[in-house]
Image 1 (cartoon, helix red, strand yellow):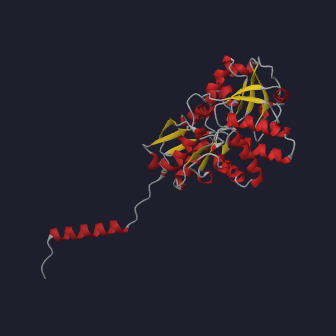
Image 2: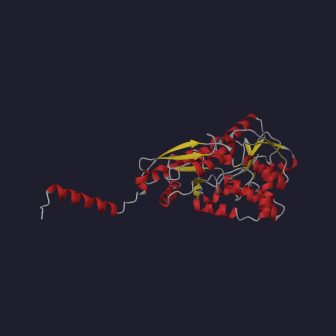
Image 3: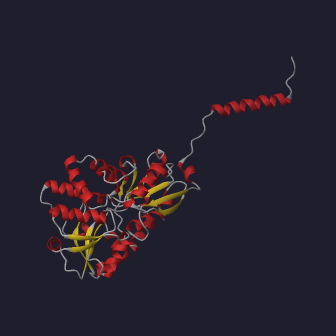
Length: 348
């Protein structure tokens, strides 16, 4: 027998090690390993300067500390079509590896339900993270207007500015279901544009999820009674607004209440944060936990207080339950709500 030379021994050992390497499972990448050194993008479906942008950037400044690996969080504004453009992008084009988060309108999950605008997403497949606060929707009227009460909205034509989506749909729903007489002026850019128009005297008021933006950017308006909140519009009454009339309580029938609730009830979702479908389960769980931890973060709470932002969070699971319930609404109620939304022209 020929002796095995050292070089042959080395070759055999190397081959054996290679075989072992092939047969051994590769250790899975941990969530911390994935996010370390990464950039996480928060896509906000609205312009800068408004309420959604304020909330989105607040979360962006703090959530990274609570995600394993502490990725850098950057903000990208992608406005258009009431945040449908951003929702479509996140659903179909954006990365699904856990490096993208979105912030969209509370109306966007219902758009596919009505079927009046072209959407490319299924709200039941989004991964909902939660919301900083339940959005407070109201009709705010400038102090010089002759309209100063909810009763006045029934009795005189009041010029209301709109900036798309809820600021059009909500007042038109109040007109259609309750019989109010608001005259809408369209074309303003976001809540910031509406507030400027209100200050200039171009409009008498605005309706929709605008209360938090006014409180954050113009607290003196409320403190000095430059504006009056004449009615609250939403799915749940806010204890913060005291005895301000609640729109759902003014419905004349149970079906009317259900129609109005379907249209304006989405305010319970506040400003919903989400992730696209198909995000790996461990990363989704980590970001959901990070979002909830961020809502309790002392630094975020201190900054929110300075910004006059209320932190009263809801979880992703709560939003998911609401969306499922909305899609289980009886067809007759959906049809009435659809007709109202269609009449606003938002779907065109």
